[in-house]
Image 1 (tube, rainbow, N blue to C red):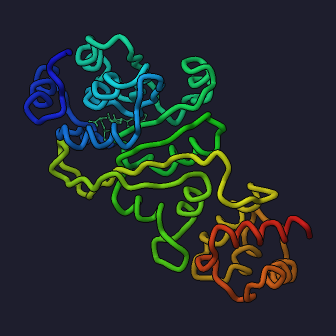
Image 2 (cartoon, rainbow, N blue to C red):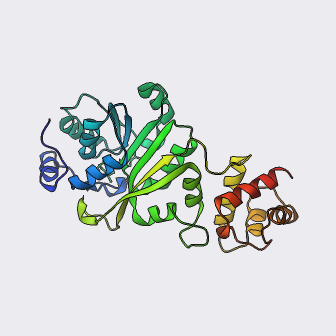
Image 3 (tube, rainbow, N blue to C red):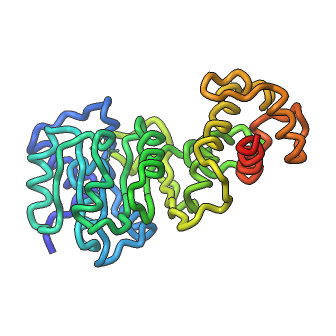
Length: 289
Ligand code: SAM
């Protein structure tokens, strides 16, 4: 086995010093320095010898080493070009890692899955840069990337929002989207001292296992997510007002009120009270209008 593994403060500091590396706040750079947390992430992702893994933001390659030990192949996508020579050094003993210098948000991940995995479902694993948590997760779900699961370190509050139930303050468009696409499981809560430098927030590792078939069926997915967006854009308004005011939907108040009544819901209900199944039913009622 290659040495040294980076999942500790000493080897991380040595590498940073060797390359005179300066942390870039704008890239959300907080490197993991705790091997127990790294092992928890890899275990939660259930990485095996057949797996092709996309790692978002490998940093200096800490988690990449652990992933490469377990997976068939790892594609490590890093935006910061200053980290590329470091990755080439720290990962030189693994021949199953491809390092790509790119913005993950601009990458065609479906094409990568096709090229590296014959179009079969991929596992995404990351200690995410927190500024792109929602866009990257939504892109992975919506852009037809063949996906098995996403196992990610994210801000604790965002993990709570993903798992929130109707009527709670944390419940919103992200909760509904995640719950439509995936089964969620918290793998670990991670304190700030497991990172270098320490972030200002607490973190959680969450595993999102994509459903083969979503838990609710809906005739027009796009319409359902439009209704969800309209309802949470104007959280304090009634759902009927939110939908009527949304520039991207063309239903009048009467149509919405009729659909709500047909679904057995009060006409003055707020969107935050509706479950995923109720949004799907409302969307189907409006599809028929
Ligand atoms: N995986 C490493 C670890 O656990 O120690 C680093 C994690 S650090 C929280 C986030 C990493 O994502 C940084 O290396 C950062 O440069 C990289 N990054 C930030 N934005 C990115 C983007 N849009 N595309 C790819 N990588 C990005």
